[in-house]
Image (cartoon, rainbow, N blue to C red; front, top):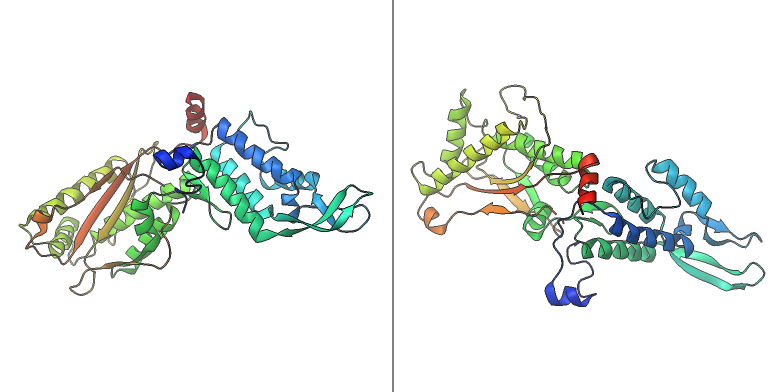
Length: 355
């Protein structure tokens, strides 16, 4: 869900395909469209589902109480003022908060009874499910058409859009490596990487690297290097091409972790301090490693349901078939890297000005 929202609605989509969802910032033009959707929801009574305007004759709700909507909006979202200014876009996380606020309030207005001629209105009820679905679709079409890497889920929560290359394995993975702490770290990384908040995605990266460093300390022994070598020996025969490739990948990832000061979580002591320093790298690591118990491999199995939805994967190094033929295949390792720079605050505003 997400990248194909609104597929076929416009000629250019049918002719050339959907636009890549890589934009991290909601600029003024996109913000103006979202303002239009929200103002329409106030005017047509859609947000009366949560903020009803009551008929002065006491005959029930008849629309959306804009003043009540505005008071609660300002209280829940201090970064947003009402009426919305199309020329002054808030930062992207605040905009996503606003969309969630509206999604919780929306419903499809349904006219009840005859026209109240004296007051000049119909009395209303609301279809919550239909109204939410319509609002989510309208917002997602606008975001998708502009290549924004965020969407609203069916229940109105903002979520990062992931490409299929990541959405499917992340959405269906259940970790069973044989080590409970490793499984916990991997699951935390999996669930947080789709968050719209940069700090949550950074935390997901930390958890992912914690898991990577931890698996290198699970084999018996006192020396970390020897234990890491023993783990790779269980994954492939020592002199094989696949084993050499695994060693190169592990060394490269370790260098990245050390260069960017990503903290470690090991079984032999406390982790190091962590500093981002404008961290320019996000990594997705999928390790189908041998289990810490027994001779069989750990398992990453699929969970029921569809994949999640957007950090484009620009590197996904696979192992040539000829390097694997005839080798010990008790364990497999696939490593995927995405390079990118999360932006927020001043960096986001600078990007918006450049666009």
